Image (cartoon, rainbow, N blue to C red; front, side, top):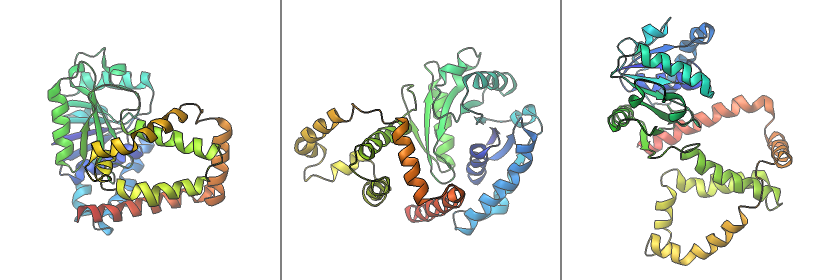
Length: 305
């Protein structure tokens, strides 16, 4: 499989690793030559760390399957799948997808990594709109395998299936989102939890640090290997129906409280920012991100055991 990765920023670099690790030949292109020049060096560091963490066997073979392209035409030549990763602007997506549709093999699937813009917003004008969809990753996709696949109303099911098959073959966990909606599914779930987290801190119920502890050492332990429906299925003697019969009224009562607060109020955001900076100075954010990635690698090894 030949894959073109369009955009050599952090997400583009991560996708290059995903596809090359899965055995694909990858061509990476970016309109910013400086970004393209540094991409292979940055990818090399990430791949070396994956090998060091025993999450791949041969970093050199992975790197041998990734090359940069000086032109978009070269990157797209022979590509059977294209993963676009440019900034979140509709006009920019429309422009690049017009080029992708014109320059790529008409049988190639064209996918965008957008986290919020539906495919219908930037593909309606295309002759090949039937092969366009969103493939939204979780950052970084070479460590967190879920990818949300969501087509526009005119996307052929065969294009979605080709994307699903490819992502599954390279070790990702593709999920199909059947209807376009803002933020797709993962961000909406994350947003619901964040809304209540902000509300609880704003109301003086708990500190930001203790709320994080509640998730990482409580809910998060189960969520690392099962979802919310399986969680409640196992949390009542007779399964989901039994759980809902026991606790449904409580959750309905809670839900009525959860709709009355602006969770993204500037004052509460500033308060949580201050709390977080007292725990982690801004100068240490990068080191903490690297620590996070190392922990994700350890967790992946456990889940893959």
